[in-house]
Image 1 (tube, rainbow, N blue to C red):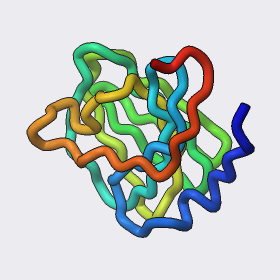
Image 2: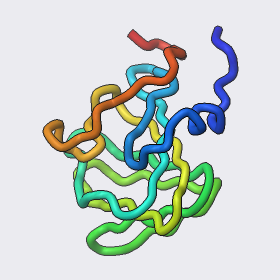
Image 3: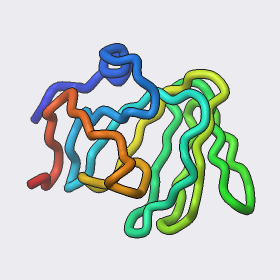
Length: 126
C-alpha cells in the first residue's frame, strides 16, 4: 500500500507543456499528469486508445470528422488508430493513462521522453 498521490503537488514540480510526467504505474500502464497549452501535433496510436481527463482548464480534441470540447472534470477516449490533435487555448492540466512505453506522438522518434516523478506501483504491475 502506498500513500495518496496529490495531483496538484505533482503538477507543481514542472512547467513544461506537452511533456507528460509519470506519477504511478498501474497494471502495466503509466498514470501521468501533463500541462498543455497551444496545439499538439496531429497523430494516432495504432495499438492503443488515448485517454484524456481534464483536471483544470479546457481542452479541445480535434478529430478529422468532429471536435470534442472538454472542461475540468470531463474525459474522452480517442479510439486506437483515430487521428487526433489536442489543443488548449490557455494552459490546462490533464491526467493521462496509457500502456507503459506508448509514445505521446504515436511515433517513438518524435515522442517526448517519458519522465517519472514518482515510483508508486498499484495493482499487478511488473
